[in-house]
Image (cartoon, rainbow, N blue to C red; front, side, top):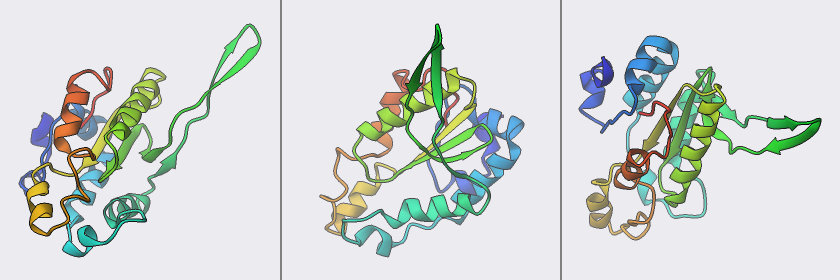
Length: 183
């Protein structure tokens, strides 16, 4: 199954890569969450007005994606984890997942520092090891959009050091997500 689980009308518009059979796991074991993610992508439109807006606030792109998922029962979630050793209690802080629903986490990284990928993947890996996260999804911008941004004279705002496809792939290929299935 794998990436064949993505309808052509969506795969024609977006780049996809999966690790550890993530699309097959989503389609087979988490059909409701998979339908939500595909619907989110199908409804997404990258508008010029959203990318030329000045800085100083959260981009409208993650707001649009997160908003779609929120209407379907997804929500930001921070797990409360602790280790107990000989009666002692040690809190293990985790970072919030942008969108979580019954074993599936979705992070939207549009124009952050690339260190956010490390944070997200480390969090995904820990939660997977604790058996509370089965699949991780990272939605990020295509590196090829940089040409468009340069053409619109906003290329500096979306520089090479910010989150985009070509910065994410080596981090996951290098084992950043551990054994977690990621798409």
